[in-house]
Figure 1 (spheres, helix red, strand yellow):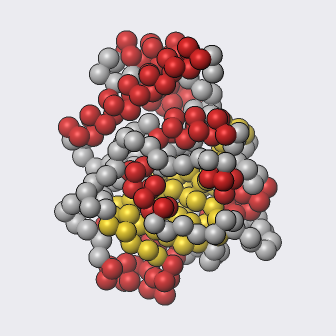
Figure 2: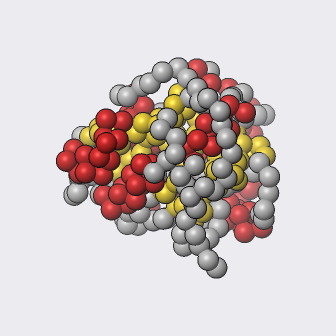
Figure 3: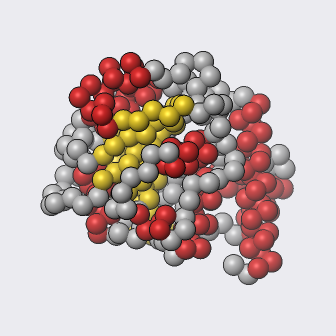
Length: 289
């Protein structure tokens, strides 16, 4: 299978006069090489309506301001570096980045792994699509470098309590296993599809409209890793913000660079997120949601 990066000029549709600015937030954890590719794809955007916040969780190879100046050159003024005092995890770092670098009311918030590359028209098309669906979270096509599969739709429908319980029996160490297995099976079976509403977006790249935060949505997820997809989906459903899969938005995912090694910490986080999913599902069963 041929796995290609997003081509220059791909999905090029005029967007007219842009109103939104895109605030891109990413988290670096000893991932300087991945960050170079990430930076390069942002600099090559045809739309200049973006700014970037990097939250550095690194404990071995922290990002330096000098490196950022070298990476972004004339675009350096659009970049803010925030150092966390410890490795606080993915979603907590994204939440910190947004809180410490808030923008205007009409700002799209794109949270993204540093091991992504964007086609040159990505930002412009993202702005256009948010104009078309101003109250929706957008989930782009995320092409996995290892498998060629699209990471979205992560979940087309909310997993039933029965399926989550079955997952707990399937792998008692982490009910997230069945949740993840179902996701991969769904991706294999999905072919060329049109944009449509889904339940949960892949956590590698999620684009939030201003409406999500003005209605009370947030990024304050307690776990360092895993399960952010379900966390976002539950919030979106609760506040009435739909999630749309947008296959015309193309992202290339050099998977495996963001999380790092499969350490004991990583496995513990996966188990914790899995049990949280089981707990939330059981609460849904009791409350009838």
